[in-house]
Amino acid sequence: MTATALNLWVALALTLVVVIASARQLRGGGMRRGRAWGVIALQIIAALLLYFCLAPPSRHQPAAGLVVLGIDADKAGTLPASEGPLLLLPEAAAVPGAQRVPDLATALRQHPASTLTLVGAGLPARDRDAVLPPDGRWQSTPAPRGWMALQAPADVAPGARFEVLAQARGVAKAKAELLDPADSVVDRATLGDDGRVQLSGVARAAGRSVFRLRLLDAEGHVVDTVPVPQQTLAATPLRLQVRASAPGPELKYLRRWATDAGITMQVQADTGAGLSVGDGAVPLEATALARSDLLVLDERSLAALSGAQFAAMRQALREGLGVLVRSAGAPSASTRQRLRELGLPLQGDGSSHAIDLPGDGESTMLAARRGPLASGTLPTRDGEDADRSSHSASLPTLEALALQVPAGSALLHDRDGNAVGGWRGIGKGRIGQLPVTDSWRWVLAGRDDRHGELWSGVVATLARAQVGGDALWSPRAITWKGERQTLCGVQAPLQAFNPNGEAVPLIVDGGAAGARCAGWWPREAGWQRLQHGERTVWRYVFDAGDAPSLHRQAMLDATTQALAAAAPVTRPAMQSVPGSRWPWWLAFVLCASLLWWLERRR
View 1 (cartoon, one colour):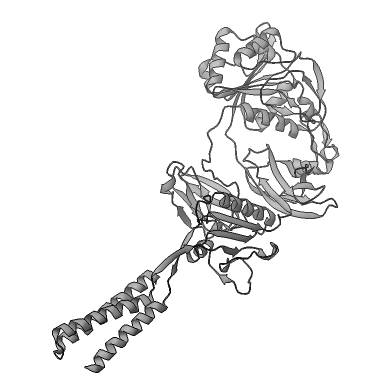
View 2 (view 1 turned 30 degrees about the vertical axis):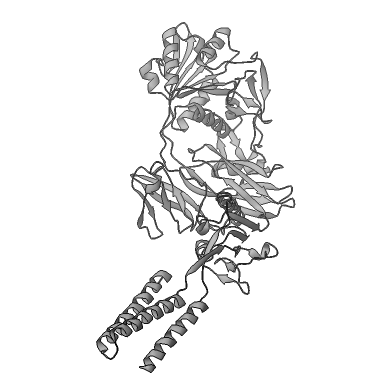
């Protein structure tokens, strides 16, 4: 029962007592009418005085400071002095003389304060929405040692490379290792001066898996480990149109890669005298280009296009078609002119030079990256035996032409981080230029996996944008077990499944109608299934126990944002406190004594 409701019941009880006593005075008949009304007035006054004794009127005074202890408050140094009470959140260790509160909002409601001093590692998710006082201070614990940021890989297609970005703190000369679900190291790198690192792996069959990111110190001891969720989705089959001025090994192995990747590919390679080999004539007209996702040309086939074909290709490019101009030789003046008309000017003399693209690191990680068949001796596509375990992690040098796309984005990067090729967005589509002439050498060297990764990245960058299958997005990149996660972009009924397999509907917040967001409280860690209309969506839920440093850093960041969002100090906060009771008690005793005297005198 609230204080207001209790005061109301007290007032009703006192009123009932006064009414009964007044009725007895009026019906008694032993007292003159004027004197009876005088006694009734004294009874009313006594009842009012008794009410104010029990519930004295409140008065306003400047609010005192409040100290709240949270997680690991004992590691934050000496507790600050405060005029107000010392309060403990549920996660805080016991302190003599401190009062335990269920949450921060309850503490602020029971003890209004002008200043709040939070001591500990930060606010848990339960307390981040509390309305904080205008003057908020934070006595924090030392920053955690280990992983402090993680960007999980995006969903990729089978056989594609995925990237993992992370940042660590507190470890000198540290290294990072990416381990696959079988605990085999697939990539290793040294952290930069800022603690950042980028690792990569290769996706296998469609499905969901959990890699692990391990942080090692200078002596090779494991400092911290976090899970890295990775989801591989079966990609929508792409449609490629390829026109070449002559057949060659680049087309041969490009077709083999496309067949293995499930890509529909139509090739036309001219042989001279009006003849061509491949899959027949590749029509370059509006209807055929609208059904294609990527058009691949070399410099001579681009220059040989008729005016109508070139106009149709340019219009299709603006409507979303991807165009790739691969190098088979130095571009002519007419080729450069047509590229300028398409919005992709080239710089450079087109001279030939060798380039080294990034390898796979140590040879001991090569088998893990290539999958379970890496340890066996398998025939190559040309029938030659190749012991895959004997190959080193280095890649053969390729030939490239000295061509650059000014103010464009890079298609590839060499071992030194220099851009190789480039692309630009034109309308809804993209056009790019790849100056590498002999990527097929990787296949002959037994590295068809890296050949596929190269072309998979190029095609994924330039091909027509596909309709995304998962429209849900979240303001927070990482979902934690037991903490509220916001899912936005809900355009259909959304359900989450509990550990028993029962569907729990998630309600869209009416206050965020534009973003259409719903709240989700996952109770289990790992991959969790959501049903968004007719589509099944998977989300990985992190457990704070599996990534303590990462969770602690997320709590520090969220607490910093909550304190920064508090209103600035404008005037001292006021709090309502009960007034003194003794004047009311004294007046009540005097009035009650007068009533007793009158009764005894009578």
